[in-house]
Amino acid sequence: MGQPVELELLPISQAVREAVDRLRAELGPAWEIRDEFGDLHEDPDLDRYLADPAGFDRTGH
Image (tube, rainbow, N blue to C red; front, top):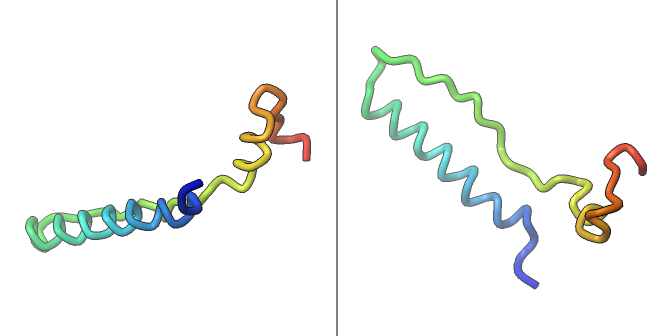
């Protein structure tokens, strides 16, 4: 099995932050760059879903 999903998401979140920073630097203060990106996190129900995809019910804890 590979690394935990949460660790796999860190580089994606970091890359988005770096891209937004580059946009701000390249476009300058005349542009408003809205950062509405939220860091990615593993779905807390992922293990239950993977254990039984056909029977998965998010509301049925």
